[in-house]
Length: 221
Image (cartoon, rainbow, N blue to C red; front, side, top):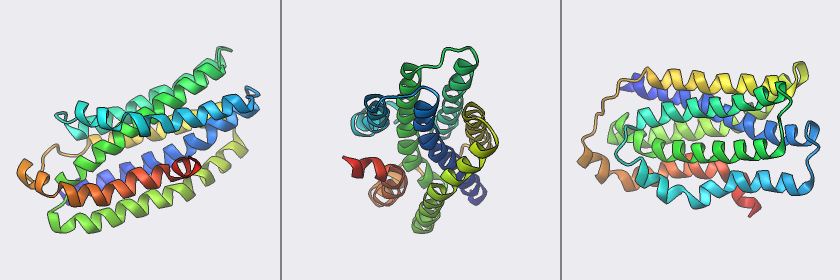
């Protein structure tokens, strides 16, 4: 199961970097390619925050009985598909602010689902005495992504156009889905153990994956 956690950590890192790239590239596309007004820029920010505030409880109920590995795989695949809409729409001359805002909202909603699934998935990959170490690794991964993501975006945007960067971003989510899919869908903890440790795990991992990932948006509120 250690290999399963390592694969999850690699996939989480790739996905987190992709998320950071997305958060930089969408506003840039809005400004440079679509000449977005301050109102539209504000709408993009709101659509990225709204799912975190509104959908968390509903999402938890919906995915409660679904395999968390499956949810994580599908979440990354859907993120890739949504991102692919942007370069395709641009190629067809159909790219617009409504498409960009809708994409931002859907991506934020899926990220919310992914974050909640991770909180339930990690306890099935490590022994109870390994939660603290797992939390530290995930926190480091997410923190690292906030540095690496924008850096990678800066390098990519210097050598290719924004829609091409979105395409590369989409590929990163597909890679993440592939890595997680390689996990054996078995758990080392029975449901009772998972429930008994949920308070400690959720308290630790929610701080790592939800707050750290979205802190710049929550601070802006």
